[in-house]
Length: 211
Image (tube, rainbow, N blue to C red; front, side, top):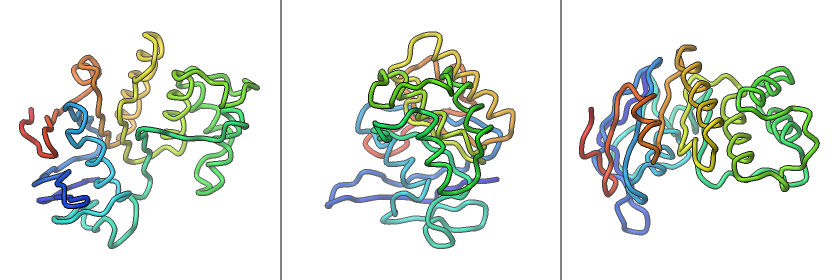
């Protein structure tokens, strides 16, 4: 599987948020995206996933054009900022409800996803009572529960303690071994250093360096 961006740009209310983005990303690799707040990492993930249209250029999955041949990337698992789930449901109930929309994840998939991030599927606490770290782990479980072909994680280790960070890194590594195409944005330099096969540096919506 190959996800490409060719000369991709995006303007919002006359302001350029992405400019001249060229990428060629392949399955089985972890691609790290680094840059200060406002550098365009989240916008880039939105554009590549199909959650946001682009003003110029084209995003393709293999030979199919994103937002033309399909609206959002198929078989996508994604974690973006400000995840909002139902406060009066447990973590398990939240994922069970979301899984009904696609039918791709059964109860065993949900249980495995929760356990992979260190959450107890039988925990009766409601999501509204979760700590920030628990909410983050649940959001990651939601991203992986359907066994996606492409996984986009925006600051996955944000608000996590050391043990949870290690658990999430192991999960990301296991997804790579499964052949998933993984995009990872993180302020945590260790995340990028440990996990990423290739790294892109963003400033003001442009890729200014890559290694």
